[in-house]
Length: 296
Image 1 (tube, one colour):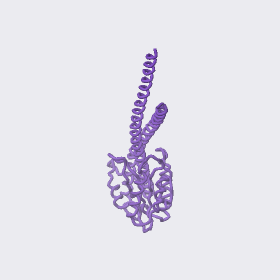
Image 2 (image 1 turned 45 degrees about the vertical axis):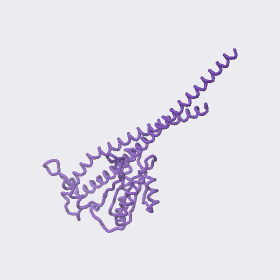
Image 3 (image 1 turned 90 degrees about the horizontal axis):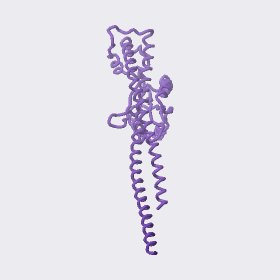
Image 4 (image 1 turned 120 degrees about the vertical axis):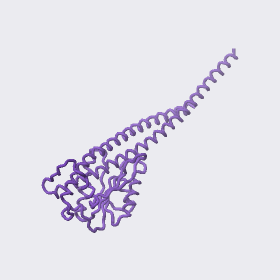
């Protein structure tokens, strides 16, 4: 009996320690979600400024032939794709969901996909599915690490696009969803078609005076396009990281509930065995007292 009680005490201690770890991980996940969501919100104002600049430049450069290469689409056998995944555990089906979505969407597009994977796990899953990713990027672990990652992605993908390896570029990632953890989404970044141009041209200028583009309109347009692509990739990465931590938070919540139920069971069993042990000791004392009394 005493050995069982000691064993239960050890299990209770271990479960309590694990509960503390889970609560800490919950707090970290919740804090990370807030940081990534705030970064997306902060990016909205800058995105609005870039869109106004694009509208101003496009209104001055209405002839497609004189616009930068991202507006033009040529015949090529490959299309570019960037897939954001996760490198850490306790995220459930996070990588499987985005991988399945990317494979399904890419299968419906003509041409062979040239893929860049963000995260070793999604890179491995894509390789197992028969793809040969062109590159692998590490998943950033903070808001500050997103900008360098996006810069590297832009440099490498632009080099392949300039070499004529692809003209269409897509990005796949998980995005937080109201009422659920996340949902897989995709966005075509390049080429910038007529509908994209019309949408930005329709953005009204906030004042009555028309804006002036300093220097070459094409140079300014190229710079704004790079910023547009940067914003799109930054948002995709931040939303993916927020979704990853939301999935981890949900997993930690389930783990905390399971540990709580286990502790209740262990405490109940411990108190029952402890009470039984006390009752046995009392019975032994009473029996000894009665036996001693009869001996007198």
